[in-house]
Length: 209
Length: 209
Image (cartoon, rainbow over all chains, first blue to last red; front, top):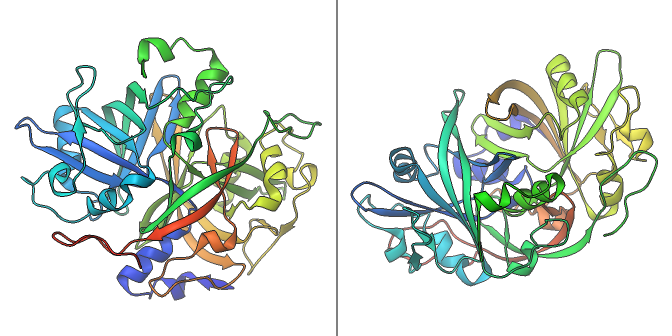
């Protein structure tokens, strides 16, 4: 079933947003914790966190003017430090609720019943309930002029794992931590590991590890 | 369990790559099909495809010099048209094998036993086995100077769905199509829908839809 641009470009706004958002496949689900100089905290759900490099350890996310609260982006530019907190099954509805349009002086931690915590002297708040918390520091950003989307680029400062599930090869078994994945703008999915495969080499099929 | 930068930055190379790659959460799993002016086809697995916008319909992926075959990036810059093909359970090992370092004149379609097809007059090859195929056109790229990573930005031209599973609100039920998600550099996971939630509004809890 082929759907062409001339067709989907005419879809109604929200229908189109859901449709096009589905195409990239499953997404990471995280909450971004931030704070400004007035100690106003913010929390925003984001499904576009992406790995950018291991050495130096970099991580990024896509911020769109109409989807991510500007408060978050302003806080990050101001304070530099922010947090990325993986979402698990116990907090789906509360995490989803952070996408409602609260006022600037309303903290989603309070309004969405999510517990905050400060760790290791880091200036931005973490989500206490999260099983995988990352302290990150804003480095730079890249603007995609076509639609004013911004790729925020940050350095990883430290990680807090709820339990030690680092495998022999360095992989963190996030399925054991209860991380979820998302689809489009409203789907929450648990996962089941099928297999992990060995590093691919020419002339030899990959092996289950 | 807190792991600080001074600790993880000393991890051995492959261990560190697996570790840091785990942090962003679950990833989309796609195969990128491309071709050059000499009709040499290439296919590369990629776990960093990300939604960039619905109107205009944009999609991107992160290309790293040491992880993605340069052939793919060169082809995309040359021909502009390329394809993004969602990975399903039947093709996990063959898709993984495309990450082996084949020579420039060796097509992964042949060496990894993946069937190609050409659709709708589009110049780049699709993966026949894929249940969600996207024809895209390269628009521009953004270089992240810190590690020479590139965000490739492309426009969606048309979509081919194996079956009609577009929900009333525009969401494509990719879980019904058999799409998978990935973790770190070697994990393949099936998913199970927990719930879809209504658009979040201040003062009202989200509802299951």
